[in-house]
Image 1 (cartoon, helix red, strand yellow):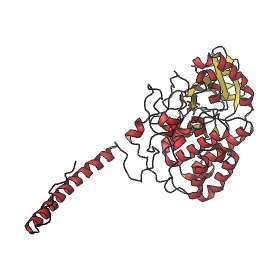
Image 2 (tube, helix red, strand yellow):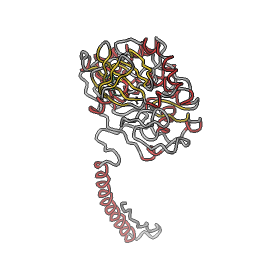
Image 3 (spheres, protein in one colour):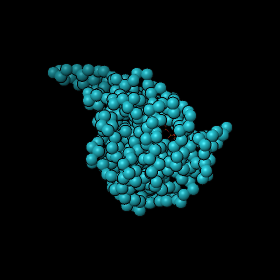
Image 4 (cartoon, helix red, strand yellow):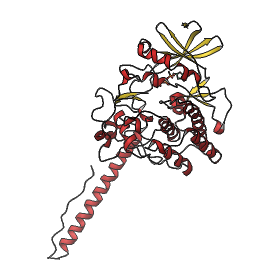
Length: 408
Ligand SMILES: Nc1ncnc2c1ncn2[C@@H]1O[C@H](COP(=O)(O)OP(=O)(O)OP(=O)(O)O)[C@@H](O)[C@H]1O
């Protein structure tokens, strides 16, 4: 099972898989490492290998306690690998799937760590471009912070940029994960630091709510919502925290906070969030129309998925079962203008069942029975009224129509 990577590293055991490759637990001259071995078709791409080498200095230069440091880049035959610090723990997606929603204190502490990581990267001129829970690792061996949160480290720096070569994506294509894409990317502008802030605010919303503000349904619909819809408030969220989220989810990149300011403002709020339970927000209604809605020219062969995503690179099949990236055409202005009705998901009131669920079907059946009984009562009242009117002898008044409303 073990395999040599270059002359200095051995990959021993698979830790996980993503759309760009497989991450291995490995051994290097200085001890254990994580080795991200890029997919063979990427490794065979000469242009990508060139960029890989070009990006070397920027990638290797990023050192910060909240960044998973890239120690080495290996180009060896058909192998293209990033050698990283090994983080013993889990990723934030796994934690979120397990807990569904995080207590605000823990969520804010984790996001503040990631904001610190972004502040360091942005200061070095590096934009991450793919901030999402999958790329935040929680170091279970690190000290416990506010809300019992372990230190959070941002990983996968530069990978989106490496793969986003002009030939692979062309000027009109978008690379990224639909739920976290800033509106200016959807509109075809070059990604600057503010796209990371938007993505991180989306992650914070997701940690608090259990769902992203504009996700759900076809990737085309998700992209359009980023541009046209406003974020729906979360019930019970402290006002100051909400204002921070709204500011960082602003459509105009210049209105968003910078990473260092975001980290500081989040940390200021930690004391007042101490002990607060997770927000009581239920999964939002996602009508079938919204789920089926699509930007008209989006690729027809892409299936509609709960978390809109296709592979990072056209033709690639991620071997992880998580949906991650999309690569699709930048929608035109007409498509972005969208229909008359918004599709942003409104959080359901706590206790309201999700459409299609067993609870929802039972509620529909109960409503039908209630309506049926009500229909019979209405019919009886109308009939009695008609009888009274006709027997009342008022000759000038037309006899009331006697129709009954029956339940469906
Ligand atoms: N430095 C690391 N130390 C320990 N585990 C890691 C490290 N980097 C990645 N992993 C684990 O390897 C798995 C795959 O990571 P990878 O970055 O390839 O995929 P991803 O981010 O989930 O998806 P994608 O590449 O499609 O964005 C993840 O589950 C992650 O927890």
